[in-house]
Image 1 (cartoon, rainbow, N blue to C red):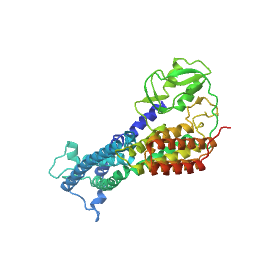
Image 2 (tube, rainbow, N blue to C red; image 1 turned 30 degrees about the vertical axis):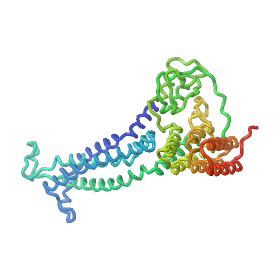
Image 3 (cartoon, one colour; image 1 turned 90 degrees about the horizontal axis):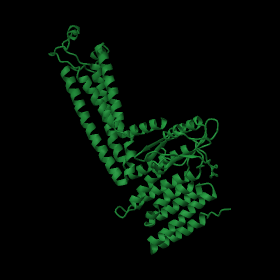
Amino acid sequence: MTARLLTIWNRINASYWFWPATFCIIAFFLSLFTIWLDRNGASDWLSNSDVLAPARPSGATTMLQVIAGSMIGVAATVFSITIAAVAYASGTYGPRLLTNFMEDRGNQLSLATFIGTFVYAIMVLRVVRHEDEQASTLKGALASDIPGFVPQLSLLVATAMMLISVAVLVFFLNHIPSKIRINKVLENIGRRLIAQITDRFPKEGNGRDEDELPEGMPVTAGRSGYIEVIDFDGLEDAAKKFEGRIVLMQEAGDFVHPLIPLAKFSDNACDDGCADAIRNCFVLTGLRTPQQDLRFLIDELVEIALRALSPGINDPFTAMTALHWLGAATAELGRRELHVSPNDMDKHDKRRVYPLHSDFADYVAHGFGAARSAVATSPKATLAMFDVLQDCASAVTGAERVGVLRSEGDRLMDQCATNLKGPDLSEVHDRHREFQSVVPRYTPA
């Protein structure tokens, strides 16, 4: 259940309807409250104010109509600009970045502010009554001592909301071009990746041997899709309830179909109830998301680098920036215990669930290895990648992990030998020899 609630929240977080709908509801009840205050004399002080002259019915009506009409027009324009920016970014940088832009809180709250102001202005406009109008009910006619009604406090609040909306519009016009700048896109992905690495692997170290995994009965997926979220607390509860241990055979981001095993249940028999409890802890959808999938964020950096180095674009500087952030994340991975996470032990330090962990070599291959063939076509990107690998080697702990980076540099040189020639190849050879002199080869004991 926790995993499904998390998935629902992720969908809401990446939507353009939740915050506008929330602001509409808030604006609706706020209008009812301020109108009630006006009808109960809370705005009488405005009539005696020398600074704020009270509005007449015709002026209030005109002002509220202008606010409502302009806000709905601005909201439509903002939505069009947002969709155009999202389409441009996903088409230029890669479709996997669509979720990143949909989750942008600045776009969501900007649209919500304009729509909320529109709803508030419409709700206040409906209660403004001119002098020549009749009350809508007999009770209202008997209770009215004056021929017209202008909710002065509500009008003041509408004016304040309009001024806030203008400020939000200025923010939005600056936010959109800033958000789609490629350096900003890469920075957001890189910082999010590093933050997820530190949260998932909080313990520093140079790697350790994995515990011997128990054997058991496989539990198949039963349906097809990408694993978006895994409910580790739910798996722990299932292991306690059915008195066994659960060894995961898949991780978030993997694609499974009905006959692929999700996990193995050991120490006891796993009946249909046990298998269903384990399956319910895996949320399968038609897309990958970065919620628990580190490789998804790595793929985004690699995809931007590959597109930048494609013949049609040929932008090695963007690829170099992507490699720099990929190197920062790789260096963070190289300093941490990748086979230990907060999900491994229960409250009594007893291991009931064994998550599937990728090792350092897998992450290096998924990042630098996937980008290697394209990087090797550009001398500038190749030299930058040697620099990044060398910097990573100085930051990681453990000779084996340093050896993984050394091997990746050697493979890059082999790839360059088939793609470059002349002075470019000679310069890369010199840089590779310098790289080899600094980064030692790993020799198993």
